[in-house]
Length: 366
Image 1: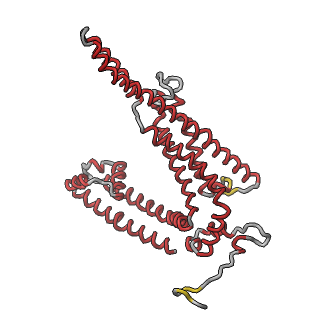
Image 2 (image 1 turned 90 degrees about the vertical axis):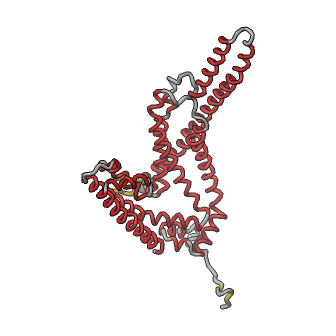
Image 3 (image 1 turned 45 degrees about the vertical axis):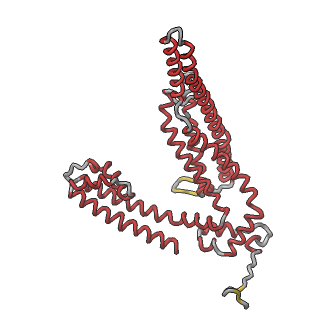
């Protein structure tokens, strides 16, 4: 019963937290995780057991799998967000070459016999720099093609194989969950399952829309060109699919939160309060639609609120603090619209936002 600094010694018996009656690995940790209670997860004995299992058993195999995932993510970021912004002047390099060449020719033709050599020497550096730019662009396009090919073969291929095995296993073991009348494999009920499936779908979409493949027949004499006429048609939808795939990659990366019990508890708390944020967004959308329809019914000439679609966008901007100050000055010319906007701000920014804070606080303390 001796106390030190106001605390007493406590003995934790963790055998049955790790092993069951048959001597196999206990499912206690799995059950605690499924309970989704941050307070229980942060309990000292749970933190001790999970850190022990993690540090002595699980970290090596986990790191092997995540190291490959991190490597593919880096390659994907390079191919979609880095290399394509190093220098976007594919055609600019060729035009620079032609410009430099024509400039050199013009100087040579317009010069007299006495300064022909000087004009050629003056034109040589610009032509050389343009040639260097063309070579750099070829290397850049090759690098982008290699990175994208790696993603399509190894990352997308491995994910397709993973889902094929998981679906076959769940169907064979009759491990199916029903959503309405549809039966889906159990592994898709976890966020890692459905998010990785979405990643595969986005990667397949990217492969189908790949601008480099669209330009193979009409590449305009440029190797791995993606700016031909056919490629331009698919470039924007391809970029949308790329953006969605990037979000799924980083969503799956959040699985690394298991490195720390505190970070895991934080991630678990974030998942618990997401429902409150969704309710707030539903309430906000209700009031946005209400005021957009009401303001559009007014006899007014404010271009920011000329119709329900435009008014809806502007009202979302007001709620998110993106409405420019000059537009507020314009409202002085339309007093009735300003009155409606003031009422909207009171309802959404003052009432709804503070209600969200109260809901998050209650959810955190629950």
